[in-house]
Image 1 (tube, rainbow over the protein chains, first blue to last red):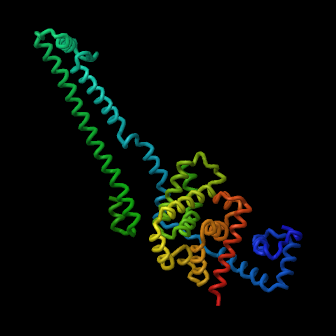
Image 2: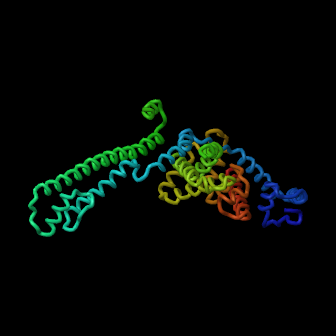
Image 3: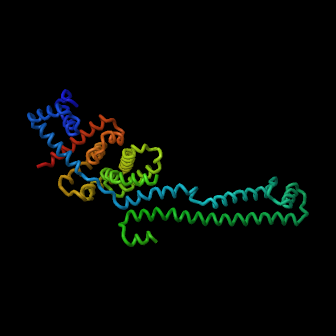
Length: 201
Length: 162
């Protein structure tokens, strides 16, 4: 803002702020000061604005509390941990086990169906199922027994995998629920030697 | 990158915290907003211009504060208003002078975006360009609104002055 831009009374506020912000050149500043010398309300406004500006500048930045600093510094670690956890935090072997279980269920369903002939079954099982489906009486008890044996193995493996997956899910869910509660308590309660011990434990 | 992030935390945590405290006053909420802002910074660290980290972070912090203020019920605002004078704020812990306390209360009474403008420009001394970027305003708008905000503060000061 230069000397020609000195505003009228309506823009007095802009002129005062421009003066305080150092946006007025020397000529404009001198012109404003000359006006202020004749206008007591303008000089009063300049003095008040200047005092306010200095007071605002002395307001300190508040230091972030230690609890916040800790939370901020743990963000990379927490985010990395979150991004490593695929699908409820289950490890790869559990997911593979789950997929294997689904496959086995599908195989078992095919074996029970009239036209389902799973490629992984023994030849005895296939023959027995074929005969059953075609209405031919099953005469060979050994083949039926073989088919039952195959099924028993499949269901045994299914049970085992299902149990391991359920146990793992339980562990993960317990941990996921417990962590936010613990973090929230640490955040809300004053940090004391007692809860430091608990945290370390 | 983790090292850069730690540097950003060192450089800007106090500024984000102070802004959040002026806007929200409630310390627990201010902490949550700051943490959310820094998590966003971590998640967008590759897409944010390194030269503009500070205004980006202040903008996210302010938006987080405004979201929380919008979600509040009127009775919460009343309660907060009653507590604001007693709870130690950014100023009261280190500056117990009468003028400082008065200023803190006066800034808290300003409406948005005046309050953010005064905090960012006059208290934290960000450049006009940074303030414009944080508040998504043009430079002339920033100056006009800031003039109004300062005038309101001066008028309040005149009222309490003997």
